[in-house]
Length: 349
Image (spheres, rainbow, N blue to C red):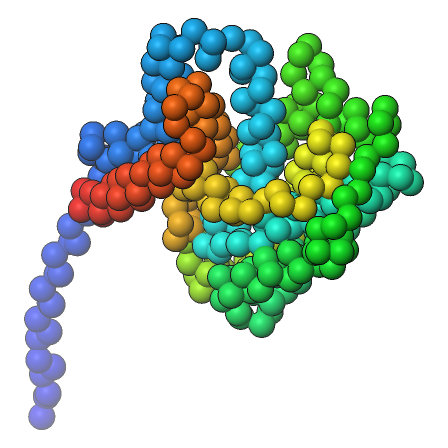
C-alpha cells in the first residue's frame, strides 16, 4: 500500500526585527542660575567683601590707603597666612589642627635659640621639631583612627609645655644675633615689601598648584568628600592625612621662625589663639568645615580680610583690639550660615 507523506506546511516567516533608532546620550541637566551664583559667592564672596571694606576704609581714613600702611598690614598677615595655608589642606581632608598656635610659638623660640649657630640651624631646628609634631598628629589620626580634635588639642598642650620647659617658664628669652642672615630674613625687604610677604606669596602659589594641578590635590578633595569612598577607590587615605598634618606642622614652625627673625627674639607669649584665627580665615575664605571643598586663594583673601579689619580698628583709635574678635566671630557665623544655605540650595536644584 502506497503511503503518502503529509504535505509540509511552510512555517510562517517571522517578521523582520524593527531597526531601533540609534540611542542618543541623555543631555546633562544644566545647573540653575541660582546654583551657579551660589558657587561663585562661596568662592569669591570674601574677595568682594575685602575690596568693599578696603574701598570704604580708604575714603574714611586717608592714611589707610598709604603704601606704608599696606606694607605693615601685609607683613603682619604673612605669618598667619603661612599657618592658614597648612590649615586649609587639613580642613579640606575633613580634619582640624588645633596645635598650630603653640607650634608657631615653639618654632619661634627654637629658631631664636638655634640662630647662634647660623642661618641654616635657625631654620632647620624648628622645621624638624615642628614637622615631627605634625607627623605624630598624622600618625595618630590616620593609623590609630583617633579624633583630630583630641589629638591636636593634646599636641597644643604638649607644644606649649615644651615651650615653657625650654624657656624656664618664660623667664629666658633667646635673642637673634643682630645683622645676621637669619635676622635679615625677617627684617629685609625687596622693593619695600618684606621677605615674609614674598615667602608667603610663593608658598600660596605652590599650594594652589598642588591643590589644583596634581593628583595629590585631587586626593585631598576625595578624602574630604568621603574617606570610605576614597579607600574603595584605592586612594592612599592614611598617607594623605599623615602628609597634610606634617605639612601643617612644618608651615607653623616656618611661620614661627620668620616671626622670631622679624622680632629678633623668641617670644613665648605669641601664638595664643592663633589656631582660631587660622580656622576663621580658612572658613571665611570658603573652605567647608566638613571637608571636600575649598581653595587656596580664598584662604588668602580671608587672612587679608582679618588683617584689614584689625588695622581698621587701629585706625579708629577709640576701639581696642578685642573688637577684632567680635567682628571676626560675626563674619564667621555669617559665612557658616551662608555655606549651609548654599549647600542646601544646590542639593535641591
